Image 1 (tube, rainbow, N blue to C red):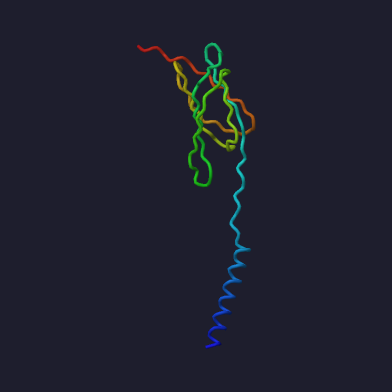
Image 2: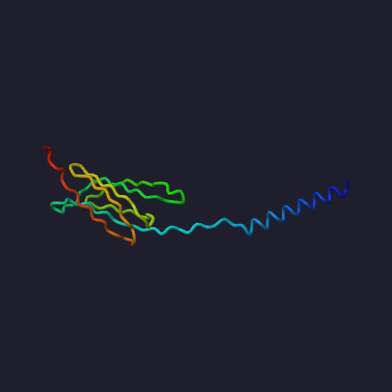
Length: 128
């Protein structure tokens, strides 16, 4: 009976040591941080070059291993500007809408920090 308990105790110690060794050797792979950039969007009137305030901006990009889409919404200030920060350095889709203007949508490759993206919105075409 004593022999049975000794063997059980030895087995328990061996299993514990094996788990501890595996825990130190098999560490999960650390994910490399994704480089981030900041950029500014400037929205202007196509004909006059005047800034458009309160234009609605929708920025969409994919993030993480699962590439889930992330969406940010913002509005331009009185100078027609809006700054986005901490955005992954990759391709993003920007949609711009404003009252009494045609909508604008395009994909941009964010390759450098502090880029300025200028968008010119046209007035809507008259109805026939």
